[in-house]
Image (cartoon, rainbow, N blue to C red):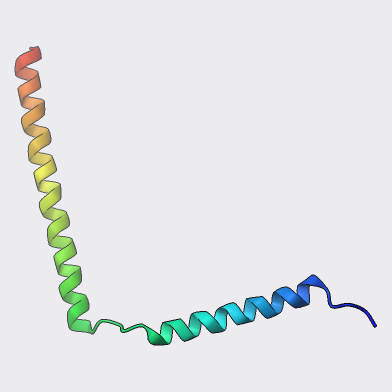
Length: 70
């Protein structure tokens, strides 16, 4: 009788891996739609604020260097 090939062994590992992934995803506590909207809003607002801060600092530094260097 022939020995099982590596392909058969890897198929078992492959399916076992995805069964484990599926089991772990069932354990995840997913956020509600309201929470998701709140989190997304916070991320967008903070991103815009940080972008504005970087823009203002860049403009001030550029203006200052242009006055110093001529």
